[in-house]
Length: 97
Image (cartoon, rainbow, N blue to C red):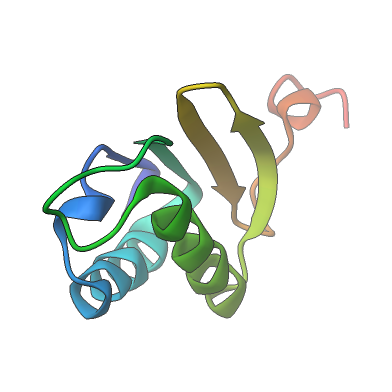
């Protein structure tokens, strides 16, 4: 198990079934958070693109019981952080909650 699993710039290189399998393993192995970062622009010759990678991740997170805690839609990239329901929020890390 890991506190944080980061999946960055990898999702679009896998066919959807393999990406879903990787996501399932990431959520199973994360005690606290799963963080994804991917390019938003079209990619040539790869099975998936960044927006689809993140849509599939949101479904996998929901199935695993994780919630979307942070989402950034930048001009160039997407960033999503999913948190386990038992993980403390940022304020909880320093004992304030």
